Length: 244
Image 1: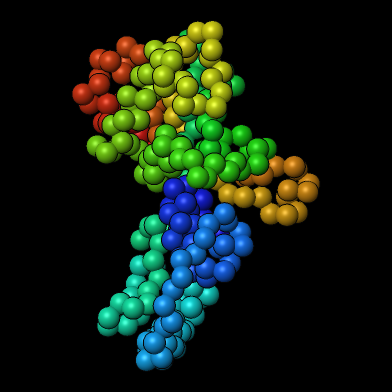
Image 2: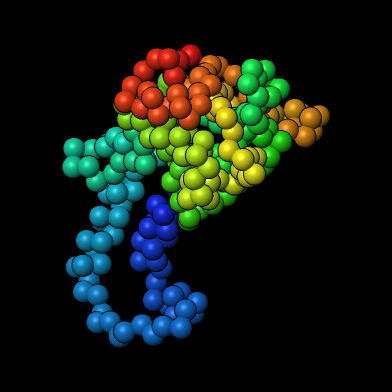
């Protein structure tokens, strides 16, 4: 209910079906429930005791989830009967975004750059966040992870290859984007800037109509041409292509 985890949400929904009784399911779905044998009294008693045990043990993890110093992926009893878990070991408080821009100018100023737009990643500050679950946008997902670092490392070599494909005007790569501002002719140069994004407050939203406030924190990849990338492809994750 609180996370946009695409297929993980679908898995949780399937597992949740088992919590409904046969009577509820047969009233909602065109299925017939098999005739079940009466539950033995000892089994009922054991089920109630186990339920009470789990309920009692769940007090600590419930308090943890409501705490401002919440811990994740932690068990709260020796037998790991109750715990808190998530898709990640921790969640960052700051949201960093990579904005990919291209230009045809030979000596570009900041006004000469035009940004590519992604299906799920925020670029424009006046756009409401999109909802894609249960579909999974792999490129946008990987860009979010890449933005956590101030510059691409060995595990982000794909970013340089991605920029190369944009400079080539590769159709398959461009199909992953929401908007290609260079549909007629690929840019001569491309760069990647790193921003810190945050949601606007209700007052800021009412005054400006903006959904996001962003602050530029550095250059993830400095302006490069197709020949620059090809000539330095083996060292593209090192200077002079990348840096603050």
